[in-house]
Image (cartoon, rainbow over the protein chains, first blue to last red):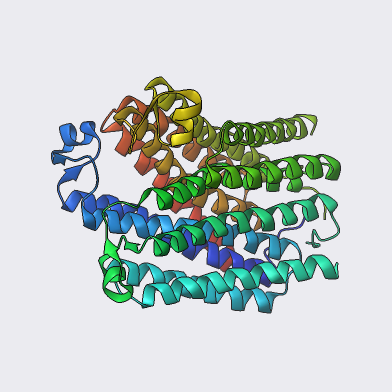
Length: 147
Length: 147
Length: 147
């Protein structure tokens, strides 16, 4: 098989995958950093080795970052599977670029406003990301039917 | 690279991916809708903007939907990675169609009986999905060994 | 499209995907088995059908397995998306073999020391896995820029 490197739809996918993975990994690392700043630990061995108060559940500022991460996972992974299916099915580069850009921008904005606690912006960016996902699914169905 | 659109194993994967993504996105959206119906909010900004009682942990009906979602994620994502590896490794369309169908049917049934709280059906459909995943892994190993 | 079966970078990806999926599925199944051993149930229908005490939150030994699983998911899924992008972009087999091996070894070790509650090993293996992921992302960026 030839590499997909000369396929512009694949390039768009690769860039979206890099940015969305960074978004996810940032949120995960940030939840740990935030827990460190609260000087709490969820595992006894962490409290013993690194200090901090052992707690049964995370303080609110850590829980917020983890909710943002959970929301990001629930939305980004399905999109990344569907995006790859779209590219491998021969989907158009133009459609890929538009839908991937909208989704990536909406998810980055969602992360930002979730951490800042801003409504109704969080709901708005969640819905935009959801609509981009639905649009991608309809495009895949169209590709499969058209054959 | 040529598109995979004429590969029937890939078509089976694309359809499975569409249905399983819809399953995941439905559960996620449904958890939010269920929270709305209980008139509770987990984020202070949601309570402030949309009303509802601020709670520290979700009421039982919301927690059930989220457990169903967590279970779906833990099982569906590994399957979708393995399914794509199977297709890209040149796995047979017939095997793909059988295994993907069993897994998709088991997971949809699992979601339904989890939301309804029906045992032992939930365990049965979980096990069927797990066996389909193990079958897929053995098929991939066979493809790699046969070369 | 030709199968990727003769592409050694893809073979490395397929093996990594098999091992990491097994890691994830093991942790998920192990959390259920551990819950069974504590004779607790999180769902009322489980307590009614299989016995055990109905609890609102999992006992500490179950919660530990679930934290290990959550950590595994947060790290492994982004890596599996990025690894596939690397292979499909025509990344070198040698780089794939090195980075995938380091990541897989670090994650298996992370799972083991998380279940055993060993620090600073857990942090060390988490960081090694994270560095492998960053290395993979830089390799993808290099592939895309080089064209």
